Image 1 (cartoon, rainbow, N blue to C red):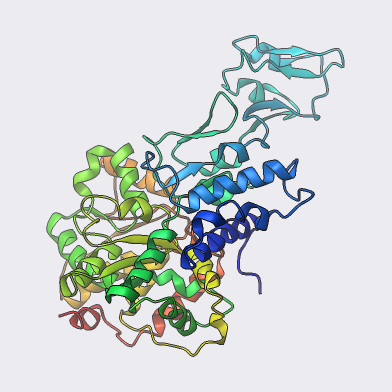
Image 2: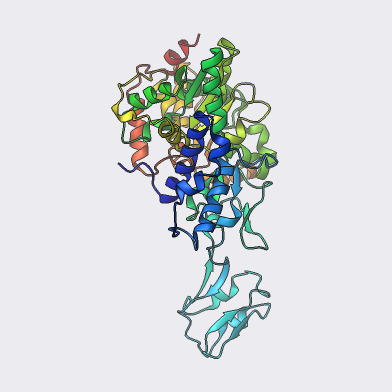
Length: 472
């Protein structure tokens, strides 16, 4: 069965798998030079202009699989050598141009950037064009289009531009590490750095000194690994050497319980669960920072609880989110979470150990309530906060603005800034439909929401108070 949506994901996975396999076998140093030939055996190229460039790009992918640039704090990086096949962004004249006599496009251009070639077709002089778009509006045939590279189009915060040398450039002052650009880049030239080696080393060390490594899995795991049952995925994680597998959804129950109190006390609040959304508020709406919930994310809440019971234990979060790779390194979270893996990386780990999880016995994953589990999809957090208020007998009414994607988040935040909000709680999710469409997912699509809801209904604990009572 197909495990990934795209061939780009599959290529990334193969590199991660081989890097992890080499680390398990203590052969990483010598394998670094062999992996490019394993991925691209040759003699002819299958993806690029020549086998030499193909292997050079694999080398860069290996670098990212080993942690990427240590001087770059951003979890998202550009593989420059892989970013050279997209046409230049900006306004362009298409073949629809009829070379008309009116030439409204020329008259509309304030910089004289448009001229007519001998074949009577309009041409835009890029050295003069300021991308104002007036020519496109003036053209009667709609022959002028605003062409954007996929990564630029995907980035809703304007963090991606083109460097002078032609490759994508990420402005870290704007980037929120949501990873939308990663999934949309058809060449895989934008990618997230991996901490898979750190996790392998933790697991190897645990066998030597008995340190327990805990896997905290995001509830969106229910929508992934469609070729196996969830209980088999849990068995596979334990087979890798993890001491146990705990639901981040239990942390979500904790957060919803406390966040409902904070909302009732302050009267207006935004969620703090999505690190990309919090980063968005920080960088683009700093005046609303005091409205962001002071509660930690479910990942951090669960990590904090585990560390309180086992101070020497290691906590690895496994989920769909690239922004978590920035969050866990923040000063406030670092004491509670030791590393982060995406679902893509978990699949690579399984296969680096040749684990056939679909053939395993099913283990149990049952710690959280229905409400904690549905945090994975848009609207779930708001439902959980409303449920917590109900269970406490509070007369405060939550009026949420459920924001699916950064564009909806922006509209809600603008209303809040202007004092025109008809809501008192902003549920901010950077990814469309929530975590089920995170950049680190194996698969994306509407089926994932149904999978998470079904997973939620299977929870033994039907209320939030019942779920968190387990921790107390």
